[in-house]
Amino acid sequence: MVTSTDYDQKTTPSFRVPFTEPMCAGIIISKQKKLLFSLGDENRWHKVGGVLHIPLGGIGGGQQVDESFVDCALREADEEIGCTVSLLHSPVTYMQDELGYISEERLEELPAPLFYHRKKRKSNEPHGDGLPTGDILHIANFRARAIGQPEPKDIPGIVYISPKSLAPFQKGVAIKDLASVDALITLRDKIPDDSVLVINTDSHEEFIMKCYEQFAIQW
Image 1 (spheres, rainbow, N blue to C red):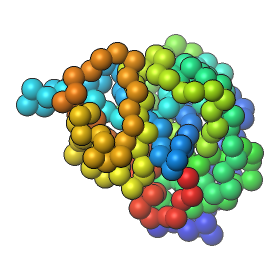
Image 2 (image 1 turned 45 degrees about the horizontal axis):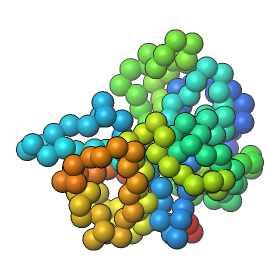
Image 3 (image 1 turned 180 degrees about the vertical axis):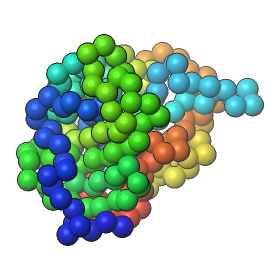
Image 4 (image 1 turned 180 degrees about the horizontal axis):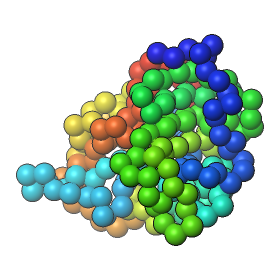
């Protein structure tokens, strides 16, 4: 594991100015020590043995032209859960680099994200017109407070899950069995209750789960 003494803050991007490399940004909202996740878009759904599998994701998404991490996180929150949020500074940032090393850092910039993750991309092509090229994807998730009630807006649904209950979602948990892991779901439209919610391997959500297992994160 990389320690804070090994880390050079000059390699950390500024989160408030337009970012010139590929990035995604989102928010972390907690409610009664449960974290808010989204159900992935339908183009990411697939069937395994005839059963629908739906990936879990955070509240967030990819950048638009000339956006900063902060701008992107605020816009995505409005688009996905239909309410304004206030970003909160995290005194500790949990970071994972493209080699998989995880460290616990204290960043000077306000607001610092709770999670910052760098991943290798399969291609350095831009995600869209006017967006930057690069072989590393930067992902930042900020603590946030919702001003209003989060509801699924342009996503299929939202679900509150306790960090200690995330592990079963690596193999998948059926919607009908969510009560067994004390998870709460709100759907935009009806989805078969035997559909399985799953955390994908090598995803940002898996990184969050690893951080929970390694560090005493206060939600």
